[in-house]
Amino acid sequence: MALYSEKVMDHFRNPRNVGEIPDADGIGEVGNARCGDIMKIYLKIKDGVIEDVKFNTFGCGSAIASSSMATEMIKGKPLSQALELTNKAVAEALDGLPAHKMHCSVLAEEAIRAAIKDYYDKNGIEYDKSLFPEPDEDGEIHG
Ligand code: FES
Image (cartoon, rainbow, N blue to C red):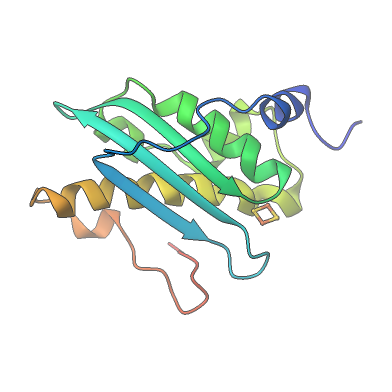
């Protein structure tokens, strides 16, 4: 079996929603201290719905494919639904990732969360703090 699914290869070669949104309502940037990869997500939000989303990922192919797929999965969706997006769902939508590449999909989940938190913070919107665990000293979020 090939190491990477067709979908991973497709989203890696033709990533969707690449770029930045200059007047983004929320921006989330996360990194993985071990591999050094960085992902940045921009959200345009209107009436609690993600109208547009773009990403910039300086990372491996799986991180690029994960960000591309994750942005497709949250575009046009309410924030509540975007917050429920797990890295597992992203990996499943890509028809799987090799075990040692699962952390790449975690970056996508974390970057989206960070961007939504940024939007809440900037607009003084109350939120459940437990939804946004603080990263530990490795820069990684557990829990
Ligand atoms: Fe680190 Fe893929 S190897 S994000």
